[in-house]
Image 1 (cartoon, helix red, strand yellow):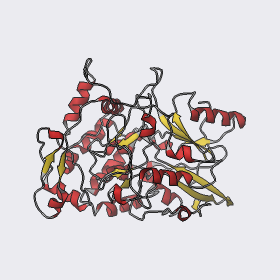
Image 2: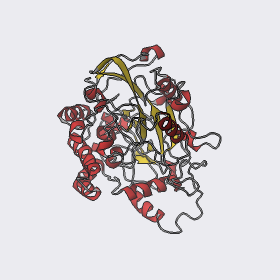
Image 3: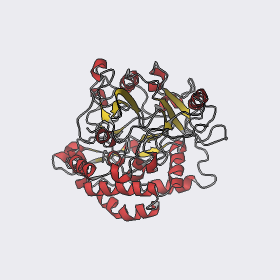
Image 4: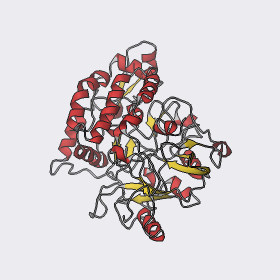
Length: 446
């Protein structure tokens, strides 16, 4: 990549961690968590602690140690990765392990009725201890009828075993077959899938938003990418657009706070949620400065026509499509398209865009499509192209590179050139902490 990422002459005044997770954010968190039964104070500590780790004010071990006992009391499990190396090792283990943890199905309806939870062990494996009655009731109170984690503490032992030479003999890899999900392409470099988004070409048509919703049967008002329109005070007649998918951060706060390891990075850098392990505590949602997470209030079959495609990626993990009821979901970078041997890596939003705004591929490969496009734009501009990454000053290491000017702190929302309603879309699902929350609404004065 030859382009320096800078803001040109546009004053951006980047947000700090204190700006993102401020008193207004804390108030929203407490309001949102009140109906879930989960500990709001712990969620706030975890979110702020994760950003402290990103800023270098706290080590991974310190972050782990401070909240470990509280996590065990709250969830009965603490599978947060301790180091970046451990995150990468966990990603590799998830990509290649042939086996899976047997998960007990908890009858949340029984818990809601005040009965003791009943666990039925999946896949005929030996029985795991059920979750506590308190946890099951909290889950039921959040509207969850989902798979709960059994004895997942064994995952750390499997991870250590997976790093032992010779481990896994006799097990066929279950990762993607086109190389996209394998951490390295032809052994030359570590793969990092991401996007180059050319805001200077975007006309706000919303075809990307509609394509994503239709592909995965997302609920009304749930958009895994938004096109946000805004104006700058010094140029009130100009409408600016910001296309916001998940940033699939290399240093993702949501991964750092997830108690079960459901939120994880695949070895190609895609950040995903294992729907079979997530129980919807919303800690990922609280900790994300980009506001990309959604809680599954309905079963997928009841929303958007439903998703009928393959739910498992090339590793056999349930990460594709709208999340089940009671489970967290977000933009997934279309793993099924990455893992197919029949097509080049792409996403539904990138292939649907008529203006050539979204370019998807391996950001670490200088010959990838997004890098070729970026280099051409740099050359065409005479080396003066303005690019940026959202909130990169927080240390999240986002994997979306924008061509255009970073929105300033004074930006104000304005009407989209094309209304969401024109596509039969709901602009916002007005559920606390969802939609373009928490940063974008407040940045645009919402």
